Image 1 (spheres, rainbow, N blue to C red):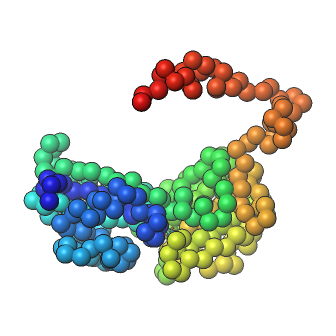
Image 2 (spheres, helix red, strand yellow):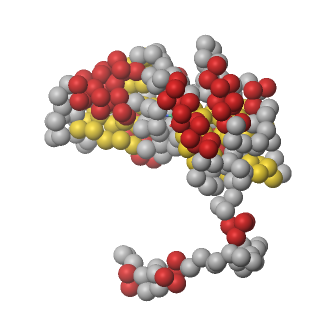
Length: 284
Ligand code: SAH
């Protein structure tokens, strides 16, 4: 193998289908001697693991997993895999916690590489239309590591500021109260007819996509493989799709003319004339 040892690559594998594993993530897995991950994610890439040492662990063993990955990576090439993006509620930050606790310094082995992946917000949004067309906030409803009052304050703030809200970890077998409270908080700021999407297991075998409303949200099945997307006051339904406009609708006619009382924006292309589109500035 030409690649050097002593490398820990933290890899996001996307929502769960090969089509959404990036070439960089694939390469990181293929060139690894050891692959470490939660057993469900290991299963998703099982066909890539021939001849490799595989360390699969349960869901609650996250810190042990990160520690094992760091330990093994002192002498070998290790890929630590997460679903979606490894930096979004994933193992990347745990790796740094383990390194910090162990007194690791820049330049020490293992060296660290992080390979981005498609997070659940992107994959689930793509299945329902264009719900993230304007500002959005991601909030995890898991209060295992974050006190509920902190989470509730963030939901309140995001709802009050009219963000589209993506709720990760909305519920699990035992954790069912949080989504009820979240719905209640958001409903103080938004109408019952606000579009909502519930996407379970995006791009996996048991994928389920439901487009509903804030008022009806709790009448649907919500579990630990679901991401809930709550529209802003601007989000609308169109032929079964959930769409959040960029905002132009309020300001411009469909022909691009500013509506009465609106000041047209200045074109960036004009402002950057001489650099945008000017071939003399392009690297060949
Ligand atoms: N690192 C992951 C998030 C891990 S937290 C990422 O970037 O996507 C786990 C939560 O992510 C789940 O409770 C669910 O809300 C969401 N999630 C992850 N994969 C998903 C998928 N394929 N479909 C729907 N939601 C998903």
